[in-house]
Image: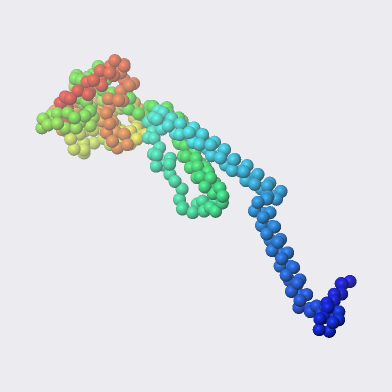
Length: 323
């Protein structure tokens, strides 16, 4: 029961009862509630700003642990990247070299990912930079590992085809040593036999008597056997696969036909002097992926180390070509 309050009226000189209006009561309640609300808000603000609840403390510990794990993951990916780079180096300069395969271009190994908004969903967090960098590293590592895996698949296929490749790559001279009359004129800049001017000689000339046997230097399929190429006279081109072709020019007689399969050491024609030639010989070229390369590097099955070294010295000497 509320207390009854009185006040002394100086005019009537009496104690009179205090009359409290309903509006005053409402204002007092509102003022009390507003004060309580402000106090509560300030208390909550201070509590949430400077003091963590048990749940917040747990979440902060989890965030700290996740941040640490991200950093550990970054370090591990860095270590894996070093290992992968070593594998790539050996792949390009060892494994693929063994099988005469071109290295994988760096543009393929280091190809990026499309789309500028790939990592947009990771923006706006306290650790966004760490999360984005980790995701980028993982994506790059995954792409490089995929490329390397495909490369190893190719090498496995090369291993399976190694026996075929070894028998296909040119590896002997087109004419036996016992049938040679003159040391070969080598690959490179030589004196033109007709115009007596410097000219690039894209093959090697092996001189021998007319009718001397000419042999295929590796397994393959005859691409052409005709006299339609200017300057070559009667000539044969063999496709050995694996990017290799060989050409044998100035024959007196061709003994194979286009489409015919031949084996290394198989007779394919006879020495002559047809086409643009100044004497009996066979002009021999090795072609890799459309480029003429030095044939002297492909006689390792036919010569002793000493003979091979002498052949290199002779072929590198600037002499006059025979065609």
